[in-house]
Image (cartoon, rainbow, N blue to C red; front, top):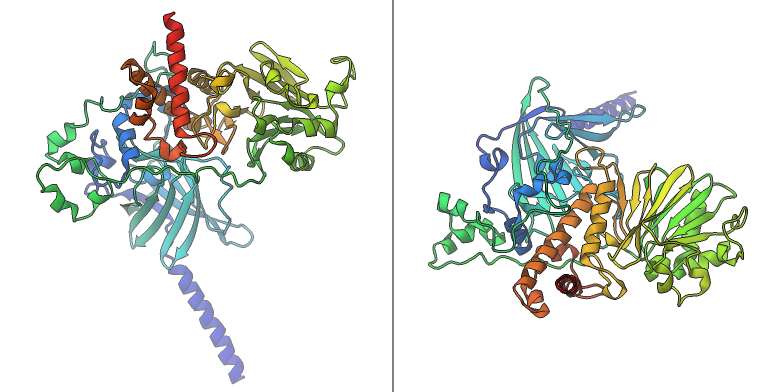
Length: 597
């Protein structure tokens, strides 16, 4: 009996220790108010001055981006409803509510939820050990977060963030950012520490803290049912307000007002350390010698294998191993937008078989261009499933019911004429679009003239609310402009603006119409807006240099893309930064020559 009593006592003590450990995690649930009167008041309240980058470990790319920033860009309809990303939003005025979500059967904590009143943002921090999503998955303003308890501190790691701000005066934070957080509670006070790692715009990680105080009641929350309006009438379609390099007239205002040395005001990694104080006292100190931006080749998630991801509705993405393929499935079978390369055909068909109903198959292929990684699988798929090209009479009752048809703009046909005829389009269109109704959904192919090539099309799935863009938009590089096959930078911009006209966000520039690029991850309107802005700004810079009468090599030496190179540029491979700048230059000079004739 004595031994049994000791065992029971030991088990009871272990239970008490376990409970004590659980309580030691110091739950964060409650309503929290920011304590900001003594912390970065200008930054968190009315907003920082233009040109004030003090205390930020930014690189040269971030600095040029910020110096080119014109706040009028926020008057563009696509920017009016943008919200702050997770690394920034806690640092401003807000009411913060935290609570736990538990499994109703096990009562284990599945997630810790945050409601941020600013812009009505709800954030989920998963506590159940799930992995982060595929690199092809969409990004959001709150990102994808996983957490764990380290003693009494909640530690959180967040990926899949959209582009946002490091400081609200144009200093950017890229969509390649990883956020590391620690929520520490001390009685009625909460300290939120963030470490922001951004390979595109930061020379080294940036650390920021924010303090909160517990509120005894549920504080009022701000509602912001944003709907964009036309703030400035008469603006040219596709115009993006910005300053050309060296033309921003407001950058010295902060230094003059505060007496801050210009070098320190420019920010940079070295300026955040105490030793920099001595350097500021040196006579004739010029601009801060900060790290230049790195060209990142790691932004492309392509691992050479195919990944199947749901997009929305009955649309799926076959990502990786070259150009993206977009799949629509339903009771009538499947539509495939682009077929990747020939060696991948069996993998592509295997993925399709997983999704289509029994007895159904792929019926329609749509090619967005003649690129090999978009049409390379046409031949093998047509030979495997049967091609409507084998029928002597087309578009008659029953004529092609047992075969796959290949559809493209007419300009694609001569580009693939060197391939076997089973790879050729069996139907082409010459005018603006080609329409279908398939699997209970309206589907439209729309020609985008003189963009990536002269044969580009986008595909719109109306019910699913998805747009497949082909290579006029890609998240892994600058747009490829094939001048030899009729491409142009203005055509690319016209195509991007066309997709923006089609896309409608669900809430605060997030979700709604989903956009699948020719290469890279699933996107939405906001992602496309940032890309459109980038191409527009580069075009305007190159155009301004052309007007000065300088040569192509001189334009390249000016590096008009340098604030974007660390995100989209490449120094080697199939499409380099130099090739992009050259294509923009030649495209614009050809247009200028034509207009003056």
